[in-house]
Structures are given as C-alpha cells and as structure tokens.
Image 1: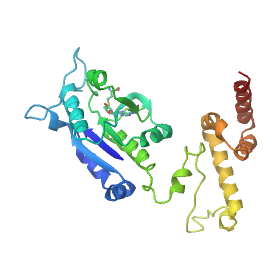
Image 2: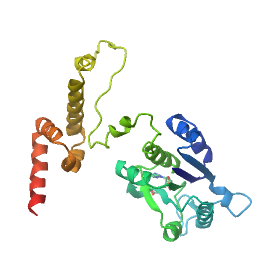
Image 3: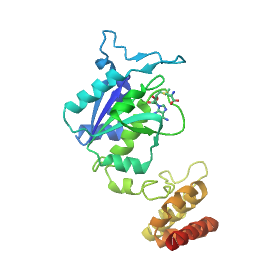
Image 4: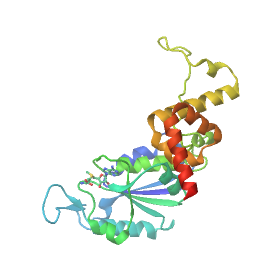
Length: 260
Ligand code: SAM
C-alpha cells in the first residue's frame, strides 16, 4: 500500500511516518508513505502557492496550477493513478466502511489543504474524492490525512501483528468494543470483573459480547439500526435484552423491508 501526501507541512507527516505501528509497517515495506512539499511545484522562486480570493474576503486560497502539476508528476512517477483524496470539511465523512474501501486501493494520493482550502478548479479538473474526518474545522488537512492513513494501514495484512485485533475492533463488528483490563488486579479499590480471571473461555467470550452489545445499545443505537441485518441470533437476543424498544424498531423495519 502506498500513500503520497501533498502538503505545505511535510515535517508533520515525516514524524508520523516513523512512529508506532505505522513506522514499523514502513520499515517492513508493507506500507510506503511519500511526503511531498507542494512548494516544490510553486513555479516561482519564493515557493508561494497561495493567493487572495477572487471577490475578496478573509484568508488565502491554494492556487490550482501547483496542485495540478504535483498530482500529474506523482502519477507520472508510476505506481498507478491510485485514488486521489482531498481532505476537506465538505467531503464524505470518513468511517470504517470508507477505510475498508480505500484499503483495497494499491495507492492513495492525499491532498492536504491549508488557509481557506483549494481553488475550486482543482476539484473541477482532477475530480478528487472529497473526504472529511468530521463536522469540525482543522487548521489543515495533515491531521486528517494521518487519520485516514492510520485507519487504512491497520487494514493492510501484516500491519497489525495479531489480525484478531482488527477483526474485533469497534465498527468492524458493528458493535463498540468491550472494556479491557490489565494488571494490577486492583487499582484504588477498583477490581476487575471476576469472570475475566476465571480462565473459562466461553464465559469470557459471552461476557465480552454482552458488554459490547450493552455499550452499543446505550451509546450508539444508530450502529445497531445500521448493522441489524448482519447480526447473529445471539447478538440480536442481547439487543432485545438491553434495548427492547430498539430491537422492536429494528424488527419492525426488517419486516417492512421483507414485505416491500
Ligand atoms: N474555510 C474552509 C471551510 O470552511 O471549509 C476551511 C479550511 S480549513 C481552515 C483548511 C484545511 O484544513 C482544509 O482545506 C482541509 O484540507 C483541512 N480540514 C479542515 N477541517 C477538516 C475536516 N473536518 N476534515 C478534513 N479536512 C479538514
């Protein structure tokens, strides 16, 4: 999997590239992260790539020509056209489904904005996929690009040591993850659920599933509604126990779908 990040702050991405699970994946050659300073395509000696907005108003806008040149050069270097992603608050909201979709691409080029964002002609001409990481405004697209890279890289085989960690993550299963505990057995008077030290695998599995369903019913009923069709009979029964009204509304909707 190769990421190419086009940015005005390459040092941010360089630090990220060498750290933690991703840093190891880069060392092992499972993931490549190319970092590209947009100023290299500025077309002037000062490396300026922004200008005032037509029509006036606050802030500067990133000019289109340097971005067009950069993307064309990166694509020309080989590695396939890949998917072109622009980080922008107006984009499709990033989630685990989009991470899974992007993980199937061999290469992703990420465009990080700054200031007031990009000249609209970048979008008109290159037609990037516009991706937001949520309904808030960051100062630049670099942190958003790191979010996308980290979530996608975790799905590349071998990046996370034990594949079960990925399979059991929140959102992959359609449930929030169950709580986890580690040593010491007591912290300021708080112990651990007795079942976890019982050594009884089936009871532990059942407790974890119950906790996952309970938490999801309480905190993210929208996830339950969205994934109801994918749940096993065991999960559905637990939803009925922790959120009877929620389960009924899912069942009613399912019956309606079946009849329609
Ligand atoms: N005026 C712009 C607006 O309201 O859409 C905000 C521009 S923001 C200050 C600068 C850059 O940060 C954007 O071009 C984008 O690359 C990035 N950015 C900010 N918030 C983001 C978000 N929620 N998701 C993805 N990228 C974001």
